[in-house]
Image 1 (cartoon, rainbow, N blue to C red):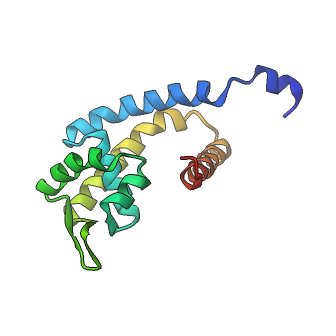
Image 2 (cartoon, rainbow, N blue to C red; image 1 turned 90 degrees about the vertical axis):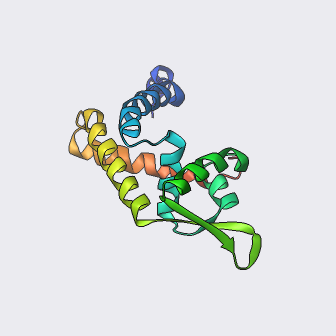
Length: 149
């Protein structure tokens, strides 16, 4: 980046935060239609990546307080979207996994959300879109791996 670009480019947060807010606002009607909270969707998505986790590991993965997600887990379990069972190696820990219904719901919500994201992504040329998505994945992965998180 040359000096002129550096001086005129807005801070990353100034560009990303408004986009993030708009994306979250666009997701809310989809979540509402499926009876999911944002945290519920985050949990279903995180469990989809790794089928079996402890509640503590899940909380760390989604950057949430362990006690804060318990009501979310209670709700998802009562709706038969996930199951919790004692870890045979540590009876104090709970193992979590998605049910087939939880997977179907997560996949349906994700599909609808991503269809809505086309409003923004459709404004990018194909090559720019690929680069943008790859760059976002790289930054998101770096944040997840960061010890300061």
